[in-house]
Image 1: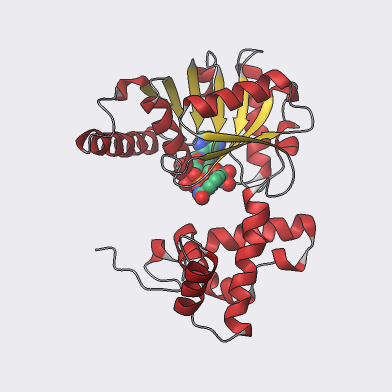
Image 2: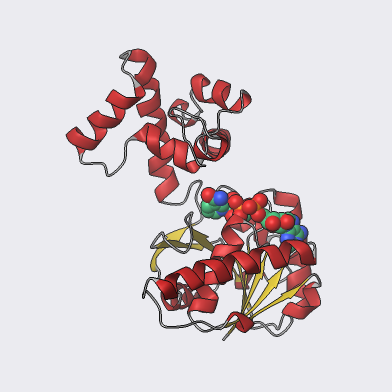
Length: 278
Ligand SMILES: NC(=O)c1ccc[n+]([C@@H]2O[C@H](COP(=O)([O-])OP(=O)(O)OC[C@H]3O[C@@H](n4cnc5c(N)ncnc54)[C@H](O)[C@@H]3O)[C@@H](O)[C@H]2O)c1
């Protein structure tokens, strides 16, 4: 099986790493070779560390070839898209992939918040378009949601499911609804938690302790949002709010203010907590 990955950013590089680790021939597409090379170096670094730790015996980085031309994805069996989270570029990309790839190839999107059905609308054969929603960091998080869009064929759906397993993930099947399964539940729940900060005038550390020790959460809500990225959480909340119009989906004003102030969590060194990454 040959895999294509379009966009080798945070998610695409993680997905390409999984494919290489599974011993699959993989073509990685980026907008420049420099970005592609950077992603490949990261993948090689992470896989080497796994070898050092005895988690895998070996890997072959040459399974991953890089390209800046979509034509090089023509003979892939499955192409997974992980480019910017915007509808128009994704629809354009799927129209192109639909034209370039073999008719039996499956085209998957890793979108978190957009409609897979709308993305598939860019293709003349929407039956072969499916959602494969990996979680961040893709090499570590066990789940992948396999999302059936309005016109996804059974063959495409099951091919994506089987690939999820082949990549060592635990796939679950669902339909194309806002937030799919996990984010539909988790985002309003986290927003509720964060509103309690102001309502109950509890500190972030006490709220986190409360949910860890009283609800059995492995990580408190403030720690989790810091890890995900405050801006990423605000963006996902806004997308769900726009689609479902349930007040719980809307990002709490405190979070929006933090995102605007550049307090993005771990990646910016400060969110609810301070981080010293040096
Ligand atoms: N980051 C997360 O936590 C997360 C989790 C699950 C799903 N997702 C989804 O995965 C997708 C990618 O997110 P990310 O966080 O990896 O973004 P990112 O910004 O880290 O990476 C996107 C990459 O795509 C490249 N790119 C942009 N347009 C392109 C194009 N037309 N062709 C090829 N490459 C292109 C960019 O150069 C960049 O390297 C989004 O749809 C996002 O919603 C993200």
